[in-house]
Image (cartoon, rainbow, N blue to C red; front, side):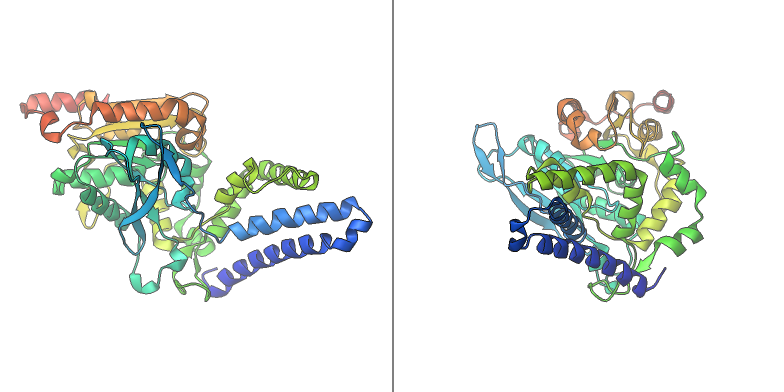
Length: 434
C-alpha cells in the first residue's frame, strides 16, 4: 500500500462520493419535479445533502468557532487566536481575550495527534477560557508538510512539548488529553533533569495510555496482536501529488476514519439514516446536533508514518513509558526525577479507549513525588469523550481540575520541598509507589 497511487485512489473515492452526493441533490431538487411530488425524489435530495456534506468535511480543517467569551465582568469579550510559536509539525496558539484582566492560571492544553485536529477539543477550550490564559498545541496535517522538513516521531513530539513548556515558563499548568499524556509525562521528567526551572506547576493527565497493559482494551489488544511489519505494509501510504507533502510516508486520516467508523458501524449507520429522514422532513440544519458532531468527527488529518509506528511500538507494544525506559534524543528519561510538579490523573469508568487503570499508573511512576502533590479522579458513567468534552467534564471534572490548579498555583520557590535525608526520601518514594 506504500504508493502514491494508493493514496490518490483513496482520495479519488472520497471525491467521487462527494460528487455523487452533489449530483443526487441537484437532480432531485430540479424545480420541475415539484409538479409531481414523489417521496423517492425527496429521499434522493436528502441523501445527496447528507452525503456531500459528509465527504466534503473529510478534507476540511474545522474552524475553532469561538468568537466571544463571557468574563467575570459580565461582558462578552472577543477571542483572538494567535500563533506564538511556529514549527513545521505544529504550532503553539494562544486564545487572547482583549479587555479583560490577566487570569492567574496559565494553561497549556496538549491536544492529541491521533487522526483529528486540535479543534476536537473545542468545547474543552470554550469551558476553560473564562478562567484561564489558554494555550493549545495545534498539530499540522502531515500531508501538507514537505518531505524536506524531515521526520517527526514520538521523540520529536516530546521535544516539541518541552520547547512549548520552556516558552510558557514555570508558572504553567499542563493538561494533556488522551494520546499525549505519556509523552507529556516524559517531557516533564526530561525537564526535571535537564532544565528544572522550566517545569510546569501542575500536570493533569486525562484518559491517557500511560500503562496500556494495566487494563487491556480492544485498542491495546490490537497493538499487541499486530506485527510492526504487517502494520507498516497495510497502514502506511505515500502522500499523493495533490498536496505539499507529496511523497511523505503517512498513516492517512481517511484510513483511520474507516477503522473508527467500523468500530461502531451500527451506531453511525443509524445516525446517518436518522439525519436523512430529518432532511426529508425539513428538520435538519447546519448546526443541529448531528452536523455539529460529524463535522468534527469526519475531519481527519494524516499522521507521519514514523510517529504512528513509533507510538504503537514504543508506547503500546514495548511499554517504554510504563517501564520507565523511554529514551529521548539519546537520553533515558526517568519519571522518578519529577519531584516538584503536582500531578493529577482523570479517568472515565466507561472508557473503552483508555480504560481505568491505564492513566492512574502515572502516579506510581512519579516515585519521587510526595503523595500530597498527587491526585486522581475516576468519573462514574463517563466514556472517553465525556471526560474532556462532555457533561461529565463540564459539571464534575473541570471544577476539580481548576481546584487542583488553585491548590498548586504558587511560586515554585514557595512550595519547593526542603531536602531531607536519604532515608526520608526513600520513605517518600515507597509511600508514593503504594
